Amino acid sequence: MNDERIDAALREATDTRNVTIGSGALASVDDLFEESFGGRPAAIVADEITFAVAGERVQRYLERAGRELEEPYVFPGDPTLYAGYGNIEKLVEALGRHEAVPVAVGSGTLNDIVKRASHELGRPYLCVGTAASMDGYTAFGASIEKDGLKQTLACSAPKAVLADLDVLVNAPPDMTASGYADLLGKVTSGADWLVADALGVEPIDPTGWSLVQSYLREWTGQPGKLRDGDRQEMEHLIEGLVMSGLGIQSYQSSRTASGAEHQFSHLWEMEGLGHDEGHEGPPLSHGFKVGVGSVAIAALYERILERDFGSLDLDELRDAWPGRDEMEHSVRAAHTSPELEEGAVEQSLAKYVEAEELAERLRLLRDVWPDLRARLADQLMTAGQIKEKLRAAGCPTKPTEIGLGWEEFKATYARARTIRKRYTVLDLAAEAGIFEECVEELFSPAGFWGREASPQARGGGSG
Image (tube, rainbow, N blue to C red; front, side, top):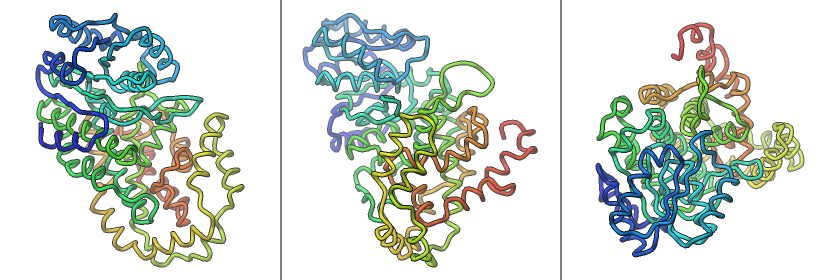
């Protein structure tokens, strides 16, 4: 664990002041609590599974230290806890009966629920992570379904975070693999920010970029060893996830760590699409969906990097660009859920540009493309490389492995673009007039996904 990196990142953070990571770290939970909150009382929040895994021990350590404790709030373990706003309302009601500092013991969903509930109560909280499953432990905001739309609700990150490596290495392998997929997704999200920066849509923040991207290759370099339970690789993974969350916190936006690959995942989550192939069980993890989305976006980038935007016909593209009303109509036609439709219209129109502004943006694209193409090539991995890393970590790599049919997966490329106002490669392709042809190339018999969907590939199992 590189403590210097964590300490430097904490100096840039707005909310988190202390991070403790190490073997046996649970035993130091009261020291961390005292340093962060003084003599205030504590209240454990967990679900039945995480309470058994670590919550009971956290409770005992705090009791032995003489810490005043409120009764733990424990969500049911079955069905799997969901990040719906209703669960936040339940927790706000329970925590509102006292003034104790919440101690979240769990992973992504549990942390997001406690994060938002604590924010609504105006309280800081401590997070004890039980799996290296996502980058949200130290992130600003919580990913919550509210009013039919999966959205990032504003809320402060935890004031302190504790992760015991002994707990993390014994977490379910799928949770570790999910965290790896979420971290590897920063490859394509970084490329999307390079595009937005080059076209003057959203300039890169050097601090936010560095916290997530500077050591990404190191953190994701040995997925096979991670899958085998290697402790050093677990340290790399949790460091990367914590640093990624601190990057989000520093920039006060998930732009630092989320791009088009996350839009794929969010669309599937909002529509209830995607599930584990061949067995019943808990919902498919966010990270696994991000992983498949990362392969999809890397494959799209490969098609785009072959283009020469120096020859764009600006007049033709400007004249063909849909008006605002036409754009709204097309977005509505793409969705069947009324709640999702309204949210998609709002997000799509928020990033809509008129035809003349589009022409100026494309003129800039034409000028910067040689340099931008080189920077993207340096940032990206190929879709095949991302696929192999995900596979080595134990992650799904194609839609049929997460319960998606090929047609609905193909339609995701166009529909995912509509659900976020964030500018990504999906917008670049659409504005440059090459979106449909690039997607068709991917799904042609000789294309990246066409080869995966061929009878030969289907007969070869998950490969």
